[in-house]
Image 1 (cartoon, one colour):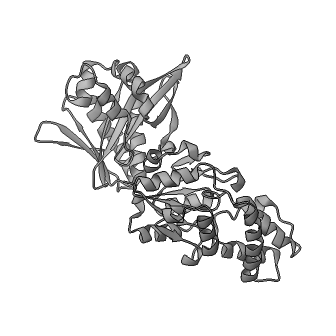
Image 2 (cartoon, rainbow, N blue to C red; image 1 turned 90 degrees about the vertical axis):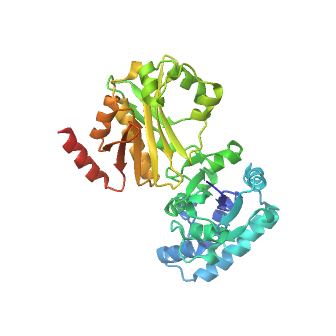
Length: 401
């Protein structure tokens, strides 16, 4: 469960990147270096020490890191006095997160004097429980040190924190720290590769407390072709899928329902449908296969992974609507969820099946699961995820031969 949000400062809370770049261009021009904004944006997310050390080496400047830093600081504060404004929507988000009882921290590659200047100027200093700056670390982003230190000061583990960043180096650092990351695409931060983030936004107005605590895991979206050539989108389920889920359910045969739910269900209430569609991605994952054709969309099936409280194992279950069985979707569902389970660092997954569900049992064997028969008459299929994927594949090929 997410208990804290760690914010970067420049480019996230305050739209200061243009002023940083202008200050750096002015001071470097004094040394005869005409440098482009694009080149300076490559250092977005790094410390001043890292950037200036690299620039001195690259352009053979007759100066020191300390001198460049002091010159930039003087120029930057002069520029900031003219205009310091928060990124649109971010102050509302910060205050909402605080009101909901989440811990907040700053993890900025900027120096303490500048960070606290922004916090005072924007009148949000009292919102933050911890502030980690360049003086507190020895290694610049993409090293995860700054985020690990922020989590430690909050008394939390990495998996309990989510980071909001605007730079590729910052996103990489957050993921290396074992944290979820929301990337804010700030046009003033340049063309940053934010693809490793769990969620990418371009407007803080689109972000609320719930989407921060439990962001939609877009990275698990992928396109795949059914055996008949039609393309489907495999993606995490959404609350608004409820009508499509009901339409799918109505295509299930009694046998399909019994195999999936272990009982015959004629209908489902809104409460039940909402439970299956509006999920907490920290506790479970559900992937649907969406087919778009003739101007409308339909869900062909769904695979679900319910994660145990120990975060080491999870139960997998899937169902494919009867008209779309025999197209390879069941196997693809299981294969895709295995990759997701590995990404979530689970050690094993298992599925419980009725003993007469022979198709599912055969599929589990082919996918490398170990089959055991339980005392209650059901069949359990277990896959050890601590094996290397190549080992599992070799065992799978042996079972297929």
